[in-house]
Image 1: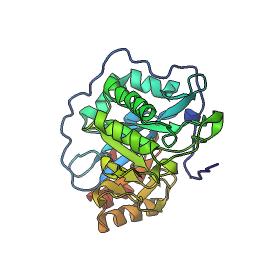
Image 2: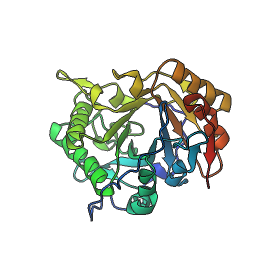
Image 3: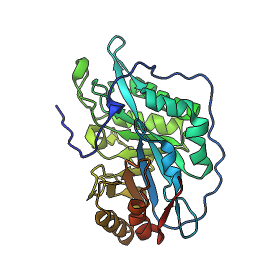
Image 4: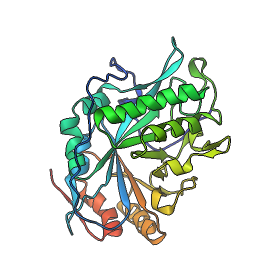
Length: 304
């Protein structure tokens, strides 16, 4: 069995809860985004564990010099790819905390978008055997892509992030990863949402299966990033440096000196993205300033 080792702490996002998978009732559209104050430098990304932290924390940090947002992209962590053993199909699943954020988009998501911050939904394996890399037909991959793009349209989101961990391929009689699955999935998703963000958390079987039958889906991603916090690792995907984050830090746990050095290296080596994880509700302006000084030449201010 493919085993993934990684230093991200998982919480209740991996547990099943008694909520529905997709419950599309009304169609949501993203609020018009007011342009954020101009800033120069890499795109900064914040994964938020919504089981324990508010997505709105992302919008509480601005640059002391110029007032721009400290963060450009907020990632809702995380929806899941689940497996229905009766129908033998994968389906998109939201635990109660993710569902709460989506159902309350007017107060949880729109304020960030109106501030100029993009909001992306991460999708993660859930120990049930279903994953991005083991769809057995193009039709099945396309059906799951539609569930994801429908969620983006329904809740007015700005895109989808792929995180191929914890699928436990082979469980519940599912198949092992194959070469065509992720290519079919990404191709269909990009066709469904040509102007939305698709990002890759560069880990797992899917991340190493980006080409099949003469089709390479690398260029269909907007961003890809290193999944190992506190380290520097260039993602193995054929994208321009402007779309890659070799740096990855966990706010409050990665030493500020490391946060700063990775940010400095991001700039000096010409990369265009800087990844952070686990922004909580306390004042983390010192941790955030450790990278904003290097990326944007400014401290970060925290507004509760």
